[in-house]
Image (tube, helix red, strand yellow):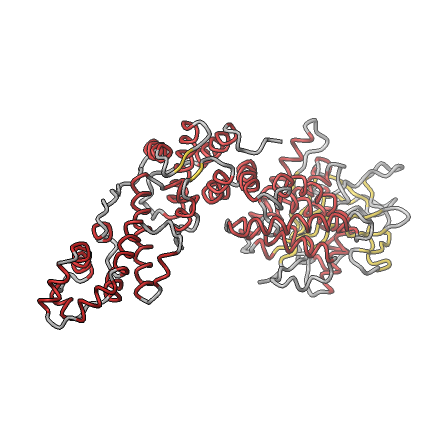
Length: 616
């Protein structure tokens, strides 16, 4: 795409000659040029305020094979006054023009051939005026809208437009108007190439003052990181390119490179809410801010980085609430990070962290005491890896006891398998998870080992059966093994095949889990398959959990603990719906304000219980 060069100026009116009282153009003067790193002596000539900067930009662009495509100029009431006469030199007969705008266009085109194809377009500005503040704001907005509309109408993409701004002419308020026009246009992708100021008088020199504009970018970049956790604008300001191995960017100091690297990591982690990495990047951010702050305030840093030191103090202050917890107690960071995200308006992050971290925070702070934590820790899966989260969100009395029974019986099957493999000492291990009923059975079968051998040594099947019947308890256990482990066979077949202890224990190990309670003559734990569908239902479930002394208890007021569990469940349910519900199948729309209210309510409930961190 062709690059489109747009120059914006603020015209200054031609003034009357002191003697003749006629509007008179001053004699031409030569101007040096320092628009970039090069110094060009007597680069252009100029007679009135806008000539030198316009001619300088046109000449520079010509040297690059380009030109000024559009020259937009603000014209005040004086420049728009109709039917004026302007003398091109002192003591010459004035020439009539429709207004001073017509004079500027004709005079500059006649003097500078590089402007032959330039589109001259004028913007109104009323001055003097009583409501100057309102006029400045209105005209800046109108000018930006006009330029954008013109570029669109002429078929140009805004990203292809380069801006050249001359801050020399017009009333004193003109600088602010031009600056705001520039910011509005840059926000939509137009690029600032040059901001120009002309020092008239003894110096007669044109200066590029782009760095002042870049300073506003620095401030905006720091503000974006504080408000939104985004490092993109700061990276652009410093010309930083992120590499995973921290390479490159040698034009920046090491402390600054390291800080921008960690800021980029933090932005990535927070924007996709990568919960597992948040604490690591916060710790890196804390150390990088400390190191960079010390460097930029040492006096050895270049001006651009020293300027960063001024806004870095604000960044550190805004992040202090969480950075001070980056080291040490994980639980404290969890609560503080949720609160910080909510305060900053990061609702999605606050909701995610609340769901992922609040259970860990509450359990670590003694919200309730789980009687058998070791069992709960075994109930995690790849999909549900945090037992604290599972307990707070899903635990019910029936589910707990059913899972607990299944775990104990699974342990019994594991023990049976070890014995079948020859590890008879496994019974001596003190594993409370193995049911006593299973241990008693296994010991008995092992003690009857020699008698089983005698039975198997008998050649007559009828005699073997008779010998087994003489041992009623052994007969009962073997019949039970036959029933549940070898349901397709019968006792005669087992005895005919000379069943030994290894066969018995291998059969026990492979009994299906739904049959295990009946095998050990235990009452199967009841399990309620239904799950809470309302916050109130979940509160009733959790209240029942706290009532069961075999599961958990709390030292805090139970009704408050139950309310917190219900509040957490509601947030987790909404988050799951927001993240996973198919289009058109969500349970109903929910406003962000409602989510914010729920998170704040939960944080306040935790704080009221005496668990939350104190507000600064």
